[in-house]
Image (tube, rainbow, N blue to C red):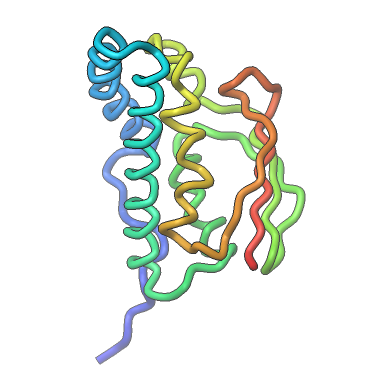
Length: 163
C-alpha cells in the first residue's frame, strides 16, 4: 500500500478566471440590489465582507488538500490556478523559504470585470481576496501590496512573507 503525496493543486474543471466570471455574474445582481437599497458605501462593505469570507474558506480548503502547513513554495505552485489560460503575467523578483515577491504585469481579471461593467468593484471581487486567502491557507503568511492594476496602477506588487 503506497502512501500518496497530498494534492497541493486541486483539480479544476474550469479555469479560476472562468470561475470568477460565473461568481461575478451572480454577485453583480446582488450588488445592484444592495446598491439600490442601501447605497454605494453599504453595498461595497457587504460585498467586501462576503468575498473575504469566501477567500478564507477557499484558503482553508487548499490548506486541507495540502495535508500540512503550506509553505511559500506550495503557495507559488498553487498560483498556477490563477494564471491558467494566460490570466496573469508574473515577473518574479524573489523566491525563498521566507519571501515570495513578484509583480503582476497583466491581469485579465481586471479586463474581465471591466467588460462586465464591474470595474468599480473589481478590487472587491478579486484583489480583496489575495491577503485574506492567507488567513485560511497559512496564517503565518502575510501579503504586503501597495498597488493593483485593478485600481489603475501599471502593475500589482505582491510581497509575501512567511514568519
